[in-house]
Length: 165
Image 1 (cartoon, rainbow, N blue to C red):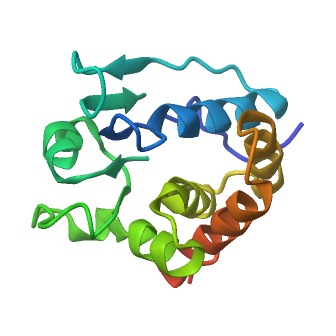
Image 2 (tube, rainbow, N blue to C red):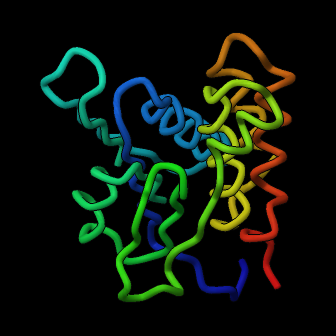
């Protein structure tokens, strides 16, 4: 038995708008945790709109309106995409980690759909999560574009902003 202290639980909140892969990211995170022997509960919330409304999978990944709406629920690090969040709250700047996921997805993959995997890679590194388990879960949950998704995950994982000093 290890003498190292363990956290009783980790809470992750992912927020955004319908169509950004928020629920899919929650599924990948949950599956990776289950495969490592953890118990997982995932709550998801959709706005009443058919498409484009607020979506939440109980990390923080937030476009501006969602960032404002869910900021007070968070106590840890806040990963945000500067292209989606125009202004961050001035209190607790050390909690904010800028991850230019949208810009990198456009630049490297010519497709904003890979921004969620860039962000998931950053979360994996910053949160000290198991990168191999995350890759395995992602390949299982997402049926297509494995090469690009793996590359986007790796890109987010190796960003200077999320690499420990």
